[in-house]
Amino acid sequence: MYTTDWNTTEEIEDEFSSWKDCHTGTFHRIQKRTKAEAKRALIVFSSLSLGVDFRDIKPVLRRHFIDLFMASNTDCTLSKRAIKSGQKESTEIVEYYTGYID
Figure (cartoon, rainbow, N blue to C red):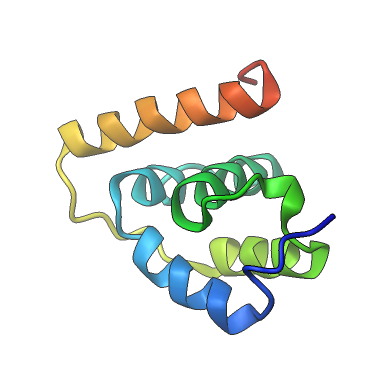
């Protein structure tokens, strides 16, 4: 069953605008733009910003996030230490949900 907490693309856009500039969001944005990276970013975004399992988000909202992610810029104003922290946190979250890191 899909969550009823997140229903509109506007809600996803609002959360994405905040997430993309945090250390985990920035870490993902500076990676290569691939579908695999977008899916990993979705897992982290769902866990940290939405507080739900990425599988509980409606497919149309997942696609909308991926479109937002792929269209986002790669500007980075964070320090290398903050990016490394984002990488570590992202890795832990993705590993928790997938059981492996590819």
